Image (cartoon, rainbow, N blue to C red; front, side, top):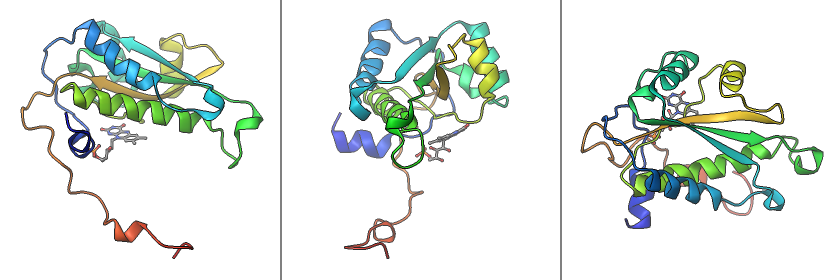
Length: 174
Ligand SMILES: Cc1cc2nc3c(=O)[nH]c(=O)nc-3n(C[C@H](O)[C@H](O)[C@H](O)COP(=O)(O)O)c2cc1C
């Protein structure tokens, strides 16, 4: 796909078909996430791919009952390894930035494959962490379903963004 079209038509998909995804496609999507930049090239991410139907249903329960998550044949938990203080130059732990970049690569690569995703931040962190047996060195930063959209016209460009003018200033913040 044209890069600009990938960017413009990546949308949060909340209805999925039951079409399965082959392993090679999942690998390509995750390989795009692997290419993300990170502070000191630390690459603090880890991806847990959940395909088992009962386990996907459990993730729905732990994510405020957002049932569309389990409609997709796979759910990916994007985990991050917390940094120590050297990566905290704005007072926040920058592993979150790095993991977010990887997740964005993932969503765009998925779109390029005709696959839908949806960032899921509304979940019970500690319960998902325990359920997926994530080590204490890592946190579960975000979840996403991964699947083919139910509707063929699901990838429509969004109109719900502020204008470019409203978010740019020159020389100083105005
Ligand atoms: C950090 C983060 C957390 C989000 N959590 C949820 C969520 O729990 N459930 C959901 O349906 N959408 C969630 N979203 C999706 C946003 O609602 C969506 O990206 C936004 O409305 C813009 O729509 P678009 O993705 O279709 O462009 C989340 C997005 C981000 C970036």
